[in-house]
Image (tube, rainbow, N blue to C red):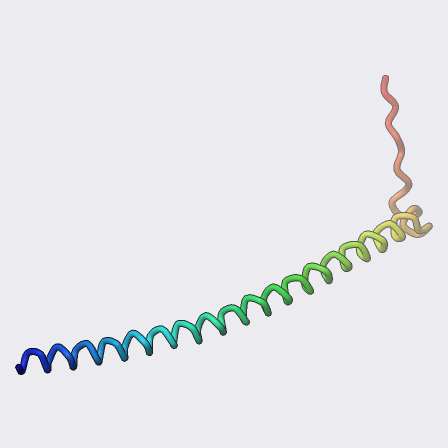
Length: 83
């Protein structure tokens, strides 16, 4: 009779443990999904910002190359003729 009581206590404790671990995993999974959505939003914003900065820098570089001061100091590009 005592062994049956011990087995019932064991199964009760293990059932409570499984339920608690499952609840903890669900909570952790929920927060992990929120973090991943936030990370996705941040990376998309960063990508758009970098793309905008790259195009702006390209425009500044082209404007600089076309300026008269740049041409005065560095000269214009000359095409090499083939012999």
